[in-house]
Amino acid sequence: MIRTIRAETGEIICPHTAVAVKVARENLRDGVPMVSLSTAHPAKFPDAVENALGIRPPLPPHMADLFERAERITRVPNDVEHIKALIRERRSNA
Image (tube, rainbow, N blue to C red; front, top):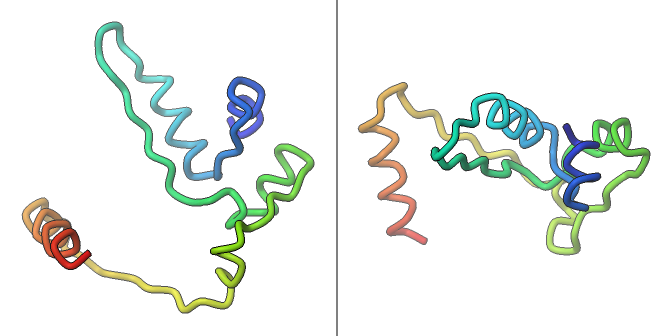
């Protein structure tokens, strides 16, 4: 799907986004909008992109130190109300 999207649009997508687009396309129905959100910059997965396209995407300048940054994880219970609360909290703290 990375190669397909590049050929169709000129955009380079990450592997996670490629999976989302593939599933979205498999589930399209007439009259029903479909949205697929990009999950990461393709340069975060340089080996996968290079394997698909033969090019290694560079990190944009503001992300040049990405692989040296500490990873942050927020564990949230599998409950929609907890997720909504986290989104509201993060949105108001932005």
